[in-house]
Amino acid sequence: MNQSILNSGTQLAGRALMSSIFLMAGINKISGYAGTQGYMESMGVPGALLPLVILLELGGGLAVLLGWQTRIAAFLLAGFSVLSAVIFHANFGDQIQSILFMKNLAMAGGLLFLVAGEKHNWSIDARQEARA
Image (cartoon, rainbow, N blue to C red; front, side):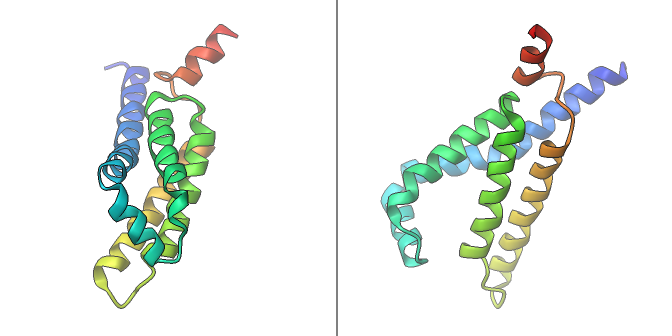
């Protein structure tokens, strides 16, 4: 198999896997809006921020998936992941919360690879660069 095709396909699969958690989380927050808002408020986060959270998860997730403004979207999602870990999953006495904390940090690490990496061949960013 051609190495370029293999690399492009692998990059696309990585973006799809990385974005899927944010897309599903955004959809779940819409369907469980009141519950999510209440949970945020119970953790000291204003519930009025929920629309921005949903917008970031859905918009950022789609941007990473499609490869559009990938570095910016990945950077914002990485910051969001770290912030979410610190606010919502820092109860290290609870093993589940510790695992969720580390999961968020691992996601942030993967997203930072997108920030630092090259443009992906199968992406809107690459198409726009080729036209310019």
